[in-house]
Length: 157
Image (cartoon, rainbow, N blue to C red; front, side, top):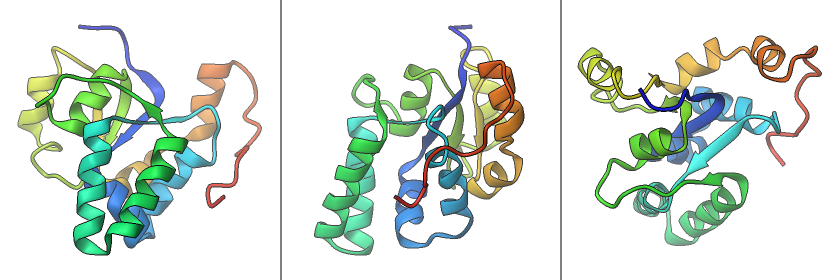
């Protein structure tokens, strides 16, 4: 197995990034966990951003899609991966993320989990499951070695 993943690194698939912008709800709650903590990183890649922009443009409009991409470029840590790989999965693998949020049932299937297990320890969940299970207090204490100070950023800023 490659290097251990970082439990404070999260990748959101294009469908999740689009739903965060256009729908809100549990998807926004999941990504607000990431945005509310400076020590938790959202990872993206050019192919993932391109897929997200295309999806938002198709569902809404091109100006909103471009603005959303620009914001994601600013608010995420960029990862490079080989062309042709699944954008979210490759971003998670190359970025050593521990969490991948997706609505894609194929990615969240037991078969995919079994195929990935020898290569990477990656939790692939729906955004609502991540929002329910993410425990910033215990994660902070494990990673930073001190008491959890609470969120340190406004997720809506």
